[in-house]
Length: 83
Image: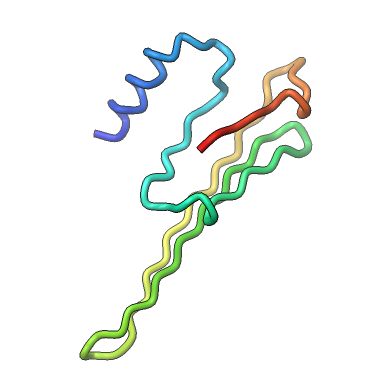
């Protein structure tokens, strides 16, 4: 499962500076926005699809929004992220 995979990644990282992992499977990097503001890291991912079928148009939409508070003493300037 996805949760087990994330737990393995966390266990294998041995990096006590990891604040969070957010599963963005199914999204491409241009659909993901990460901002650091007001002591919080915000992750927003939005995916939209439009398909034409024999019955007409079908639309698919999915999004993720996570907000993680920075631990005390961590400056917003220290935050880095990767996809």
